[in-house]
Amino acid sequence: MSLKDPRIKKQAKVIVEHSLKVKTGENVAIYADFVAKPLVLELYEQLIKKGAKEIKLHFSDYEFGQIFFENASYEQLRNFPQTTMDEMKAMDCYISIRATNNLKALSGVDAKKIAQRSLTTKPIQDYRMQKLRWVVTEYPTNAQAQETDMSLSEYEHFVFSAINNVDWKKKFMEQEKIRKLVDATDKVHILAKDTDLTLSVKARKAENAGGEFNMPDGEIFTSAVENSAEGHVTYSFPAIFMGREFSKVRLEFEKGKVVRARSDKNEKDLNNILDMDKGARFIGELGLGNNYKINKFVKNILFDEKIGGTIHIALGRGYPKTLSKNNSALHWDMIKDLRSGGELYFDNKLVQKNGNWLI
Image (cartoon, rainbow, N blue to C red; front, side):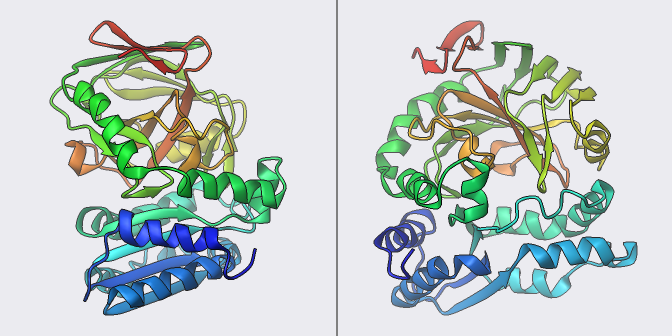
């Protein structure tokens, strides 16, 4: 890609003007991998033109994380990065750009170390989500393209099309009908292959995700009443956590809690992660994928959870704006595909079949 690729320029414009709505005099933090420099340059230029007061740039690479987790003592894992928190408190907006060159860099790291670091840095994550305007986006790399069995040019087209070829204001309006229906719902029932799960969303608040916090976007999400989930779900695609894959994950719920968690791969690590803290085995988010321009699983949650006709259930931390009461250092989205034989019921009424809305 050229440094002046017009697709990158348009992506930056969408982020600055639609997602964050940056104003004159605001401070913005950008966290990115080195390879995402072309997008960071476009963002920087547009932020300067918008009148941003201070732009803090943070570049990193998978190798730093690998070195840290392989060598850090538990004292270092528990050390709270106060300077990072201080900087966050001076920011108005936060941009995270995912662009790794090695998706498996942390696959050999002890899951307990990752869990401990997540617990340590949780206050920073909470502050970003609750106090800042933030957005997570993607910059295509060879590693990501290879993971999806695409050439780099094919993957670039996939990424930029999902971001730039959507009328985000129109998408938001289209999703409002669904959001209002979710808000009026008590019981959600999910039926599909190896899945029969009920949960309550009564008195919770649904959110219309039309490109403000994720880019690309296209979902409606809410929280579940913490003790309401009953039944089981077997996820359609591998669940991925910090580069580690868990295939054919099956979760069994009783009174809202995962009482059994199974996986064909890395089952011990799966349970170690779910034992991170008291909230990790409870549902923090129920999401309804509604971006029908994204129709292929690419092992990238930023895209996969938006696939039209899928649902995702995140274990752990819920979003305060959805009135979730679940508190955890974990937030792990896992995806169930309803496009082939799946049924979704709201208060015993069939609202979606085979991934298509009936409302």
